Length: 146
Length: 194
Image (cartoon, rainbow over all chains, first blue to last red; front, side):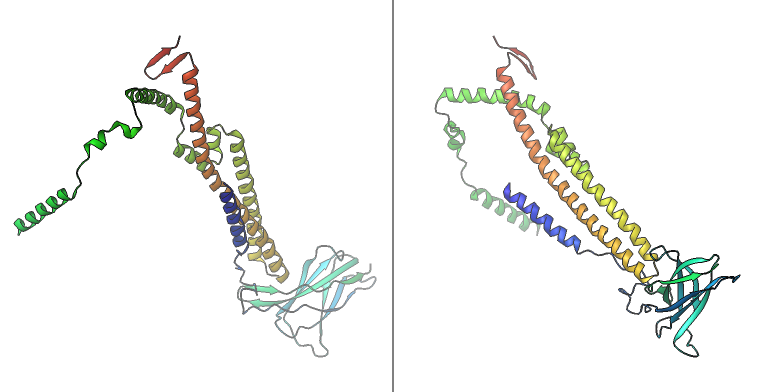
């Protein structure tokens, strides 16, 4: 009886350890862990974000960031209403052109209302199975006057 | 050609017959091999055998088959134990199995949801986070499934012993009731002791 209990305990421990070693297949075609040809775009560094001034009819935020040198085919711009809130993609910058002067790129984003805005950015790289988006940048604050 | 085969067959049979040892009739018919020293011993044994045969018929009415209980416990863990009147054991096996397999299913479902989202994800942080969120419950679901399989297996081992124990107790009870009861119901009729 005691030997049988010990055998069951041993079997349980062995099977538990074996099953813990089981892994799900990384089947996402954009997953760089399972696909050596996939390279993640680098993180974007936002230089500044400036809101439009008072009495401007078409309100906007102008965002400026450092251009990524490699593995980038475009940029996503995210907007949130608080630094820790949910962010949503509001605009896309297609391409990664070399600026005529300096190392930064910029874009104006239209906003519907004045107020406090928080922005984030990410770069993406186009692959046959879709766009792989890199890590999100740090947030930046912008104020759009009334 | 056929004659040769026939002759060889006859020789083979003859050799086999001579190879057999002489049948010991005395040893076969010796009553002392059963431990009977006297005629009375022999009669007592015969009477005891006759009584046991009667009891065996009574016992077989209520005795449970191991294969039947094994099948029940294989289909629903604990069912065989319930059948053998081991209710606590049956409840433990059933609740353990429901708990383990239910938990395994819930974790697997959670893992599958996250895994499907992972397969559709395009953002690197989402890809890593969703894969991790799928992987962890998946492993735990397998652990719970394995534990469920072990409990199921143990339940099958247990039902064999439980049925044997039930049948042994039934035999004792049958013998006790038979010798103590003033009115005895046998497969052949009634018997009243005065």
